[in-house]
Length: 101
Image (cartoon, rainbow, N blue to C red):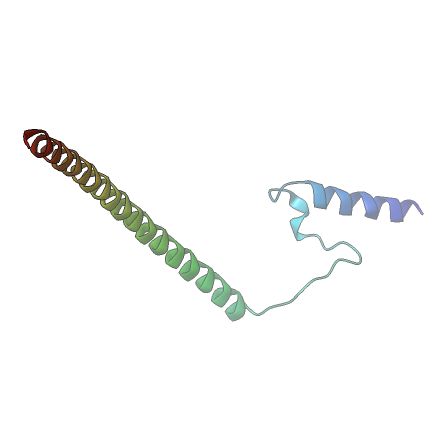
């Protein structure tokens, strides 16, 4: 009975502590484990590194596209303001012509 409590405490400590714990090498009873070969482990590491590289490249591309969108949005706002000014000028000109008649 005491052995079961000790095992439960070890499992609980293992689950609650950080990855820096010495218990990460300990397999608790009823804990699911998987055995892989060294080449499989290396392949997993390689895939993880490749995925991180792809994510970083996509993040950089996303940032560049966002900057481009911001610049284009500024241009749109500038041209919209020019169009508004042009409309005001045309409206004023039309009023002057109407008043002259």
